[in-house]
Each structure stands twice: as structure tokens, then as C-alpha cells.
Image 1: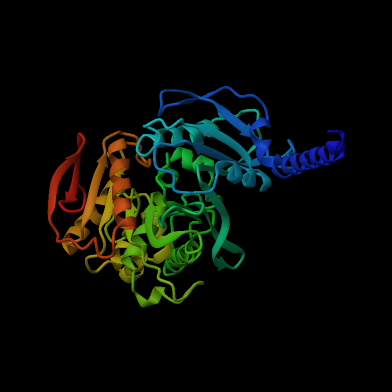
Image 2: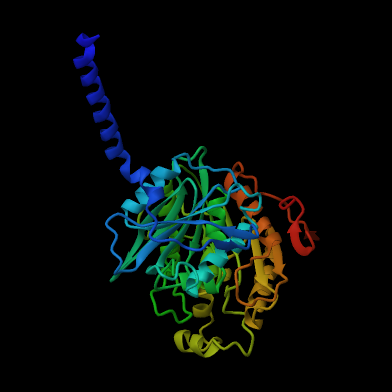
Length: 446
């Protein structure tokens, strides 16, 4: 037996070496669940009706004297997980990139998906806005991202360059998806910081993060107009930029596992941009500007919420009339200049189906604009789904479950269906989703 002791000692030393090497290699991963910044009280989730424990992980090279970008990482949601990379490797990479990572584990609660999850997405941003979420942490309010399990984040992808300004987008996408996915594109309502938390919280805008949780890639793009925003969207420059954004997302998405289909979402100053992508499709004055020429700038769907779509049909008391007149001249004398600025006024024929929604307590000018848009679509024989948000919340993105569920079904049909699916005859009927009246085409929303 003694003859074998030296050999056994060598084997033991080799085993110890392997163990030490493995621990050193995987320390960032193994250590991530054991290195919270500090202990925090559980967060009360409106969606599941109880508090959820937080795991707070500091980034590599953490310094407490500067605000940190933050990832709120949602694990074990109810919707199928589309990204195939493991949580621990994704979280390790986020921390290595300098993010404070906050993990919320939903434990597969059946309500942890659209349309119910959106309440939590809104509450998280609202709590951050009011300093109630992680109040002891210094967080950069312009770079707070809510990312579902299995997804990664691509930041600052440039899609257009203006003198002195590079327009970019941030993309949340399933990492090595189990199937090709569609993409949802939104143009920010914050002209200074596209992911500004204050703007997203005040507008209750949860659409992109909700659809990311449902398995889509989502992108928030810079608004084409530089700050400060004064309510003027100069044409054709705005159209050049938003079409460049679509082409860039389609080109980049090809390497991220996207299927090439894109739907636009617009609210407030972003709603005209979403409609403009539809109304100017195929028009030559808006082509050949920006990068990725040769790639289609067409979208396969559009969700249009409250906004301005035409400047030819304004209420007499519209408070913006003096500003428009100063910019474009007297409307009667310069009608074409006013026509040129409105996204709706480029729409001359039936196009792809649209989903429209607005709050019942919106201002009279916004409600009038939506009525004008719907009337024009009806005249052209366009397919539409219209849902009036019954909760009197004013100028807000809907949180009503019936509307969010219909929006999700609409996006699934636009982005997952086979080409040509949307070509339905014009047949309008009044029906309901749950207890909510909704105008729709019979074949489009079931």
C-alpha cells in the first residue's frame, strides 16, 4: 500500500489544482448571488399581490460615488422564455459592463406576463421616480432598463447622424432565441434621454418592456427632433431619420435572431412618427437618406396612441395654432406647407391594419385628432382596431388589461404570422373585449 502513496498525493494535488482553477474561472458567476450591495426590503408587487424579494448585485469595479446604470432583471415570468442563454452568464456580463443588477423572481406566478405584468413595470418606474425603490442607491435615471430573463441589452446603436448629434437606439433582445422573433420599435417621448425614467413613469409607458417579456425584441429610439422640443417635427427630415431607424434595426436584428418583421409603437410626440412610417411607405422623397440603403424601411404593424397626425384639421381653439402659424405662415396662404408636416396627409390609399387607442379623458385636441385619423382610415377602407381607454387618466399610455392584451395579440399577428396575412376586406363592426367596447374588423381581432 505504501508504494502507492506518492501517486495518491499527486492525484490529490491535481484535484486541488483543478478545483482552484475552476473556482477562479467561475468566481464572477458563483459570487454574483452572494454580493448584494446591501439588504433591502422586499418590493410589494401589484401584479402578484405580495412582496417579492430583491437580490441587488453591484457591478465590477463598483464605486459608490457616482450614479449607476441599472438593470432590473425579471426571472421566472409566466410567458415562455425565448432566450436560451443562462441567467447567471447574462447577469455576470451585465455586472462586468458596469450595471447595478436587481433581480426580481416571480416564481412562475401565472399573472407575471402581459397584460398584468405591466402594472409592476409601471410601479417600478414610478417608485424609482419618487425615490421609493432602492432609495440608498445612486442610480442614473437616464439608464434604467427592465429586462426579462434570457434577454440581453444592446446600447447606443447609431441609426442616423446629424451635425452635432448621433441618433441612437437601445435594443433588448432574447439572447440566442429558441426561434426567430419580431421586433417592436418606439420613438421616445424624451428628446434628451430616450430611456429617461421620469418620462416613462409620467406617461405610464410599459409597452416595450411588456412585449419584451412576451418574447419580442424591443427598441427605444431617439426622437428625430433634438431637444428642446417645441412641438414641430420638420419634414422630410423626420421621415428620413425614422426610416433609417427601421433599416438599422432590421439589419442589426438579423444578427440577433430577429425574423425581419418590425412593428412601430407611438405615443404623444412619438405617435406621429409611428404613423409616418406607414403613411410614407414607398414614397421616393423619403428614400435614400441614412445608412443601410438597400434594406427595407417598411413596418408590418403600427400601434398609434394619442398624438397629432394632421395640421389641416385643427380645432379653432388649439393652443398650438400660433406656433404653427409662426413656423409655416398663414394656413390659408401656405396650405401645402401645413400639409407637408402632417403624417396623415401622406396617406392616400388603404394600408396595413393599425391598432388605435386613446384615453377617454384626453384633451379635446387629442381626441379630435384621433377622430380625424379614424375618419380618414374609414374613407380609405383601412383595417383598424380602435379601443377607447375607459379609465380617466388623461395623457397616458394604457394600463387597462383588455387594451394591453389586444395590443399583444395584434403584435403577435403582425410579427409572427406569415406574409400577406393582413389583407382583409373592410368590414367594421362594434364588439367588445371583456366589458370594453371596441371597433374592429371581424377577421383581425378574435
